[in-house]
Amino acid sequence: MNQDEQMAFFYELFDASLPRLGPGEDQSTKKAIDLLLSAAGKHPDAPDLERSRILDLGCGNGAQTIQLARHIGGPILAVDNHQPYLDELRLRAEAAGVSGRIQPLLGDMCKLGLTERSFDLIWSEGALYVMGFRQGLEACYSLLAPGGLMAASELCWLRPDPPADCRQYFANEYPAMADVDSNLEAIRGCGFEIVGHFALPESAWLESYYLPLEDRLDSFRGIHATDPARMETIDAVQMEIDFYRRFSSYYGYIFFLMRRSETR
Image (cartoon, rainbow, N blue to C red; front, side):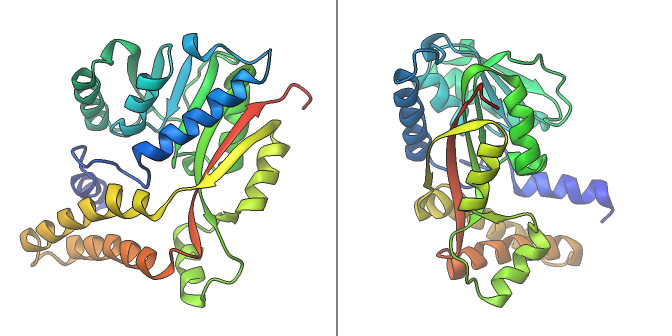
């Protein structure tokens, strides 16, 4: 397969119809929302989240976007670079009765050209790595209004002693992955105050993401059994799932919750 064919097959595997396109779950999204709402209530200069301007960066098919619309007021600009994901978001938003609050935008999250200080809340579940975690934080800082809030989930090492094959796997797949304390330091270094952080539970990986994806891999194996290039891609995704089952105590997604500080 050439590069275009590889990308097309990737989007076939990670179809918009999947419940989620990365680790996450409604309960964890709601937990993060509640923590931010509580933090906003403690700061007199915090934005009014019932009339907030929200940016959802890397929204995918909108699982978390729907939760934001259900629990926080104000318009949501939902950005992704794959139109079928945005089409699915529109369908889900209509079914949930919140379509009037959500504006999907097709675009590269690294080149949006949005106005500085134009959002009260920025949300990004498992997507900042596209820019680089620190670079993404810096970009979001400039987009937030004074006192604005942000939530972002990031893949982190949970223990300092991963087995050699686990560490080598991520040296190839995500060499920039850091531990929780290093990412907390990066957040503070970019001008944010820490509101809180917590790890996504295993259910957010397996039940919401990997098990539905694994069912899809099984069906694709039958379709592409004689296609070595596509089978290689299928096996690579399966390896990711298998690695999580073996090594989930060593790495995971951390939800980081933060507030823009004006003492930067």
